[in-house]
Length: 318
Length: 318
Image (cartoon, rainbow over the protein chains, first blue to last red):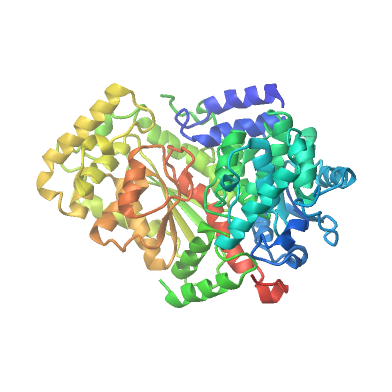
């Protein structure tokens, strides 16, 4: 973070032609962006959205409304420009990249053993890290992975405790039987890996998935490159939680793009101390909610950097 | 409204490559836009933001934190491109027009007599009507007028009843004495014009202002031209309320762009039956919240019109 850029932005904001505070959350948001991008009068010209895709052993247990082959099918759809995230990225001038992580080699069912080997985990973290374009000026991590609300719920339950059913939701739309199945799968996973639940990276390895690890790696890489991040929904936030559990300051360069309809997301954001910019009932993943929030952030930054001061405009201050 | 376009959009939405309902409010929003724009597969290429400016007799009573000359100064600032609304309009590719309504002739202090003559009212309504570009494909009405939360509160109290203090807020930032002053001014206005409070247009004439009447005229004109509308904050919503009081269906072509920090705005939106797209604590006016919501609507419409169907993409349905 660049405190001098943040301070300069704060001082500039106070002189702009508006009543103090009248732009509400946009003011804090623009100052946050200035601080984390290191620019006192920033522009957002090159947002990057990356969709990480992975397959999950637990999908075979019937935790999703969709079959596992949809992960690969949707990757083709992303590449062909046909998914929601393609349209939203284009709307806000973001480039979109797709990174499929060994889709033909799903993670192990975590009720049977660790989802990933240590080597799988490191490889996925690195893939995520390297997917971030150092020239980007804003980053959104999205995901695709049939079944992946189950590992996300398992990670949240492992790192934050509480009742398993508070972290498990309907994902793409499972019925009551599917919901009960998800709960029992998560409970079995927590029991199976009880001895490693104190360590965030071990939790990620035991209960996570490749795209979740890649998202964590990408969010950390964005920090290293000085690129502010908009978080997406429940799965992205579970990936971010792993970083937060290692260091509560690790997400200071991030904002919650939106609050998902997946009920546990609101609870997770509270634990992360994040107020969502949007709350429109999305539960799609793909980075869709994070990318939609690019518009809000662009508007906030445009006001900070483009508005005239009272002195410049000859407007009487209060 | 074009029901066949709405129906076609609803059918298309059901086939897009996402779990049913996973885009949440964006789905209803895009279908609403299709219905009111009359395009089954719409695009938003030409949004228009118009800022109406007016001056108010009640401003002399000390109901604002800013002096009345700021209205004209801000008009110059809009014309020079220095205000928040200029930056937000540019961010979302909207053209922005400024219409100043006889700023050197403030309305009459409504505690002394009707704010406007009938001729003033008709002229302001017509100015608003004519300000809408028939070629626009989305319309946002914004305003500037020092003191204008007071007439807006008076209109709301007149047409919806309830305690005056429930409709009066701090506007650009008045202190407790200013707030008490606003309440007593609104009460005096309601008492002075008690015999006309049953008629929405008479309320607008007696308690409103030129920019508020112009906003009402513009929102009605957009309906006639088949242009969907995003409402801004409290003052814009008070203008819309006049139309709603005449005909509850008169605002069906509008969505609430945002919920303002001005407390009475949430109450007013409830009366109008509108759920705001954004809630970011803005209380600036100028159309800023309505224009910020253009991004959300553009994203929604881009998904509806640009996404592939399950059949096109070869993705397995649930």
